[in-house]
Length: 479
Ligand code: 5AD
Ligand code: SF4
Image (spheres, protein in one colour):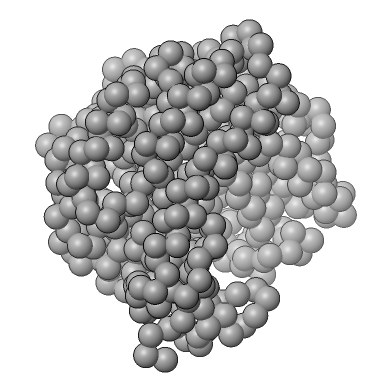
């Protein structure tokens, strides 16, 4: 099988942040009619790893594939198109992908016309792409985060010419409006507002894989929100690697606080957003969050470390004092605020004292939830070149200690729910007991309770009876 390389990723090109205007265009497909014939009676399988941006990309790919007639299957063995949508943020996410492709390659051997595609952040790294090519000759399509809108044309080319196709261009990127979307959930939706990242934190691969910060037009975002409201969606989450940067690349005169306010006025019951960088979180944003009842009082504010020198080496653009002052302002102005964070332990050469600063910050802020990670070197990033004198064993010990510190407050917070009634958006039925439902409070606490499956997608009152570290047990109020 021949390999056709349309574009190959390049980390130097991926670093480019020349000043350029944000380019907009609507997605279109060259081979639409041919694809409708090819897709007739066929199925697709997509498996997504990683963050919400990847989940939203999956929904776009589903929309494109279903628009020509492919039907979804949960069984890769039945599929005619298989897509693995990958994550590159840490090594363990990549290891899972290698394992999964290893399991899938037999289907390609059994079905020569199967399109077996790998996309997402992993393949944006040239060295990883090479490893994938060497290890898995069965894979016949590689495409990057900037080529998602071309999916149908890529599938068409692979299907009709029996080649291995690589189409991954490292670039700053555009804003591509793609109206094709099949959402994974009927009452909770993700809405992209800004793509890419310009922050280049020294440990992070995302700015290389997802291009520059570029905002969608305000009117396009609001059209999407309006449609979701019409379709009775109960919750939307605005997405961006850094939502605070919304609008800075456009001259429309709108910032992220305006996005929140306009959406809040439309009356969607629950509005969330992720992620916010502590560096450019404005007081205006805090005021808008406090003002509207339907903007959830939950802020995900990744701190990464509590030590100034580590924050400087990470390239985070704020210090401990700035972060703590911001938290103080938020807690003062937003009653009932629930704060969550991301923390990395074992950044190269992190000392025990520096790690202790992270523990003390955690004790001061008292997060309601947190994602914790052991530092994972990402080839091509500045941190990966730093000599590291901290052993993995020591990093693991610090990780356990950090989790223990976090859990003190998480458990205390969970206990404070017991005996009170909360509004819960019902998410689904328990896999092990069909009489049990689960859902989330406004503050994003997971709650399990008995109830009928007709309640899925509705907001109900639940009285909390019992608390565990990462979930609550309750009972429906009024039946
Ligand atoms: N190693 C460990 N954690 C990382 N993150 C990003 N890059 C790395 C890395 N190289 C974490 C950060 C970020 C979250 C999405 O993933 O905490 O906020
Ligand atoms: Fe990565 Fe930093 Fe950008 Fe977040 S802000 S995506 S951690 S570079």
